[in-house]
Length: 344
Ligand code: HEM
Ligand SMILES: *[C@@H]1O[C@H](CO)[C@@H](O)[C@H](O)[C@H]1NC(C)=O
Ligand SMILES: *[C@@H]1O[C@H](CO)[C@@H](O)[C@H](O)[C@H]1NC(C)=O
Ligand SMILES: *[C@@H]1O[C@H](CO)[C@@H](O)[C@H](O)[C@H]1NC(C)=O
Image (cartoon, rainbow, N blue to C red):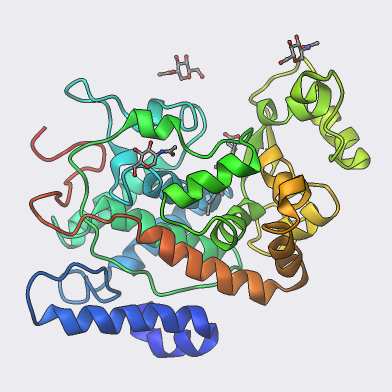
């Protein structure tokens, strides 16, 4: 990754340039006092093979689990939206502080923790005590997108891991039944943009799986009407009704993007154009009355141009990865094991 950063920048255009620019800023500060910004070359001296090591672990995991790339990018999202990108999601319950893994959006849903642990173990072998768990999530997210056919980018690094977690904040993650206004407010609250970042990052639903329980309301009893969601395409509704019967197993899995289930491409947006978004929170970006002057034009633009989607997605992922990182060593640490603080 960083060894070929000049080629990557020329391939990526604006988004790559943004990362390169941020890296240059980081270098400027490196000579002075405490470097507060993340940078792409953070581990170049202390763990030069960090990226390759994580990549090896991910490729191995993918052999037996084609879903793992999707699961891993979601972990980075759920980490960054709670207390910032600080590995808080990975902590187990300790000292009465309840794990974020037990919060509703994560319990029985967030997965891939063993692969994060395997990457951590491999990094500890190569360079003990150097690479944070929060950075592993950021690196894994990039590798997962790139190996699924999506864009690559230079990952900014240097996050420390938190001493705390917040189950309460994790309960408040963006939810599949949130209205567009609520989704937009949650993105603003996370210091992201409530239109472009919201739409671009929702494009993460171009791969991965989703349980029936998150669509049965739309199929059978939308907003308590005993009718299906009128914005749901009839053919897709019939397809989903077969897979998710009214009183069936709510944990059965479906593809978030049935056209190309494991590829990172723009099909999430072309699906929304024909009313084939899986989640209410997906389709709203195009179909909510409030979407017309806000998110819908961006959905249209990404449906029309994979290049536009990829470029915005990279910019938004870098922004998401920059949510409140811990860089002050008095406020965080490099955990030895991702599920435990070192003093535990
Ligand atoms: C905008 C608000 C969002 C909502 C309401 C939302 C909601 C959900 C829900 C309900 C699931 C299915 C969970 C399950 O069935 O167990 C899911 C899966 C997923 N989400 Fe999101 N999500 C959002 C944003 C994002 C973002 C920003 C990303 C990444 C950039 C992302 C990536 C994924 C992926 C890849 C999966 C599939 C995971 C797997 O197969 O293990 N989501 N999301
Ligand atoms: C997590 O989900 C399982 C079953 O899916 C349930 O038994 C358990 O009580 C849940 N944990 C919490 C903390 O809600
Ligand atoms: C907004 O973010 C803060 C932390 O930055 C969090 O504690 C709070 O719960 C969030 N509020 C909403 C409504 O999402
Ligand atoms: C439909 O949803 C409403 C409101 O959530 C609920 O009161 C009603 O019992 C549901 N109907 C059925 C048949 O489940």
